[in-house]
Image 1: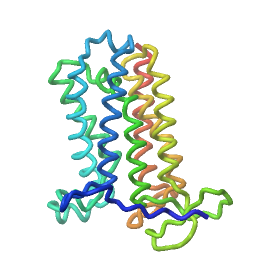
Image 2: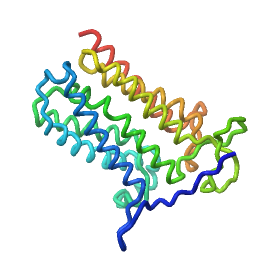
Image 3: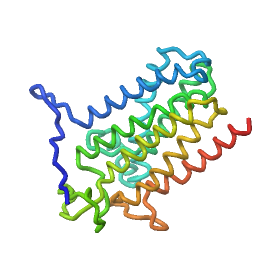
Image 4: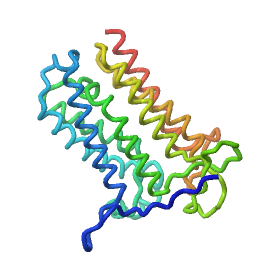
Length: 263
């Protein structure tokens, strides 16, 4: 069995200022978004829509706000509603952890809707532009989870060479390194599939729909290897909260794709 390397979460520091690896993975995610979005502008189907390089910077700014606000509010509402409804000011304590991808997704959708309204662009045109640019950022975030030794996988007796003990879990048993599974599935694989799919002209919303379908299905699979949140456990049908949140995500994705195909 492997043992998690127990990385120091602090990458480097200058006196009292400490820079954490997790923060660096967020910066990497933003940089990857800028790079891939600029590449998207070179694709004929996107470049013909009149996008400018400065639009990418604005999209990133609004996207960051959506990720942070939506991710924090989503965690409070989806995972610990009774705690945060009783003490709503605790939501502001982002340094104590607790972010939800699905909440962040809703936050980004709201931010992109605001951007589209301000620029007079169709909402789906905006989301179709950025959808293929998101998975590499998600991959970066999963590397941050692995470095921190958090969101570890379920205990397993699988005879594979990569099972790993996470001392942070408090139980010295072999687990799936589910952060790396998610890095490969929701990050790299989803990026390759979406990038290939988006290179050809598609109907309005079809690229966005494929992102929702792809992420939802791949996250659903990955959740079978990821330890459920201790305070929630498994819910109805032995599915985790993450899996239940993926169900409407996939359904909305199918509806978007079907709608775009009909045009």
